[in-house]
Image (cartoon, rainbow, N blue to C red; front, side, top):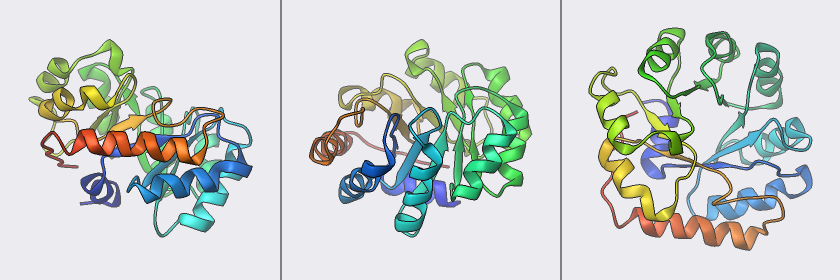
Length: 213
């Protein structure tokens, strides 16, 4: 099992810090780590994202899996890898970006919405798949797709995931979740972020998990 799978097995949440600033990113990360959230994603449409990624990688590289989100091209994949990112997350199904991310030594998690996109991304070398936007899909669709995807394929719904709807996704075979504004949005204090992370963890304890990345 790779580092992504090991961390998801301990805590299945990826904190998407869209809009985070470099001057606050470390305190936000501390709050998340205090609640066991070990995968931290800084989308590239945030202010000075490479600075934030570099700060996280330098301070928390041993404790967290630091990544970049909204990675849209090969040049961006190279840039975030140089900044210290270890995982590249994409909103779309782009084989070139997957291959560039792998060539740079990162875990690659592209977005997909259909079985054709899922198989194409796995063929390109994806380590896990981001079901996005999850609001346009359903646990039933995920369960049907997992019946044909290779065993061990990790699928993480992203979009519209809340503490009160984790159960059906987990029952359908989700191995984790990308959580954006439900855990962090611009202006959130570290205390508020920690409280939201705690709410997700409390909801998680009420449902069974089966993680198989």
